[in-house]
Length: 328
Image (cartoon, rainbow, N blue to C red):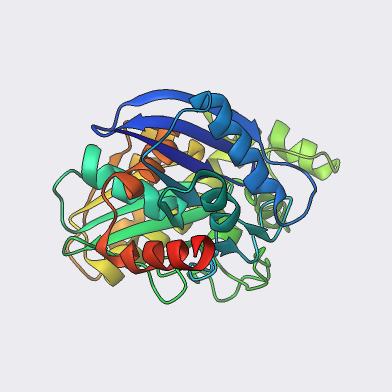
């Protein structure tokens, strides 16, 4: 049996064919369209599936998407980090291929992929957290995938980690973990961080001159020993991430937390050391073991396909509703 996994990110859409045992047969990566209507994203996905299958049949399609989601309608009603803010997913795809379609947020899909095929295999209390353009999580408690009324039970990137912060999140809130620590936001956070401070630092000099400094450049400067980058990452960014992770542990009491996303995977030793330095300061429960996904960027495709390979009990009602609503 062959399934499709669709990973809808803020920057890229990845689509893959996946076998029942979790092996990725083939995959394709496309940039998110910069403009269009509510069907544009789904049309990109449909084309990718057609290209991969060559017109052949598949047994099911799983979609892991940036959120927040509206699972009842099968849509993304507002994606703060994506070019197109509102788009349909389930309806155009199920009408085109007429097979079961399962939708979850990207981190929800990833935790299910880890639960079935990865380092979290058989771990009944498990969290997956992605550190990328945004910050998101998927949560399994006592073997049950948490979903919530709309599919947004674990928007942990919007946990408040600093009540005094005046940095606004893409969702409109303040002090959110994602606003202060995600890949999309580090460039503006570090500008706030240097207010009233002075460093002997090339990075500092660039910022003072008004130059744009990317998240990747901040981390590169860290490894080069830059004074500002060291202070910002060691004493601010890792503290923010430790506070967020402690809040997740306090809320869900997991045995294992799996970290993914480019920011974490490209800086694994730094993340491990930095989080360990601050974690106990914010923790009320026994700490969870922390591992990194072994699938790299493929966890998005694999996790999405996993939703279709073994549909979680908490999503089955939605899958049945999609069939009745969109196929009649």
